[in-house]
Image (cartoon, rainbow, N blue to C red; front, side, top):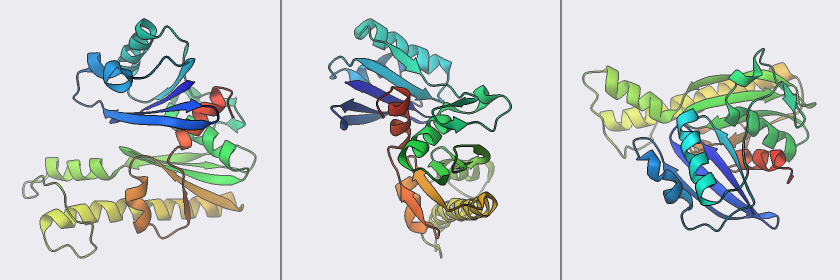
Length: 246
């Protein structure tokens, strides 16, 4: 068994790979939580895997905490993915490859493994990242902009007459400030994704496919006008490639 871990800005998500399939999965919100307890909360009921592969943008302190728990509890190898100049069929566009978030790098590896054609990889998390890949695996570059939650939080924080409210409705014609904020942020992000991927596909000049992943992917999908393929486990597929299992 292999434990695959995606440590994002807000959540730690994991799946267990065994006999060619994902057999178990879970997640924990790590923002504001007691990090000393994270390992037990995440995997306290799991049997010992053969290895652990991690993609993290959550910082070295959190990864160190997870590594210590894994070492003390299971004593198994841990591989932390890092962005490289080239590898696994991908060539990075970054002059300093290590500065690219590991989640983006691993997501592109997953995309390359899933489809053998040009693609735009759209990861809808705390931040939205969109990366363009040519049919030969050359990373053309990408963009990063705030996700839905960050947009809402900026409005709540930096305006005087927009109170923080939860459970708004995503509508185009909001009839309350709450619904205007919820609808506005979702439609803003969806419109940005459509516009940017459309321009990227024109620049690629190839028969390309847009892959949609990340925690807000299913929320955004109904509001997107373009054609997207939902790939909720894209990062985990990339980690499988790194682990030599795909």
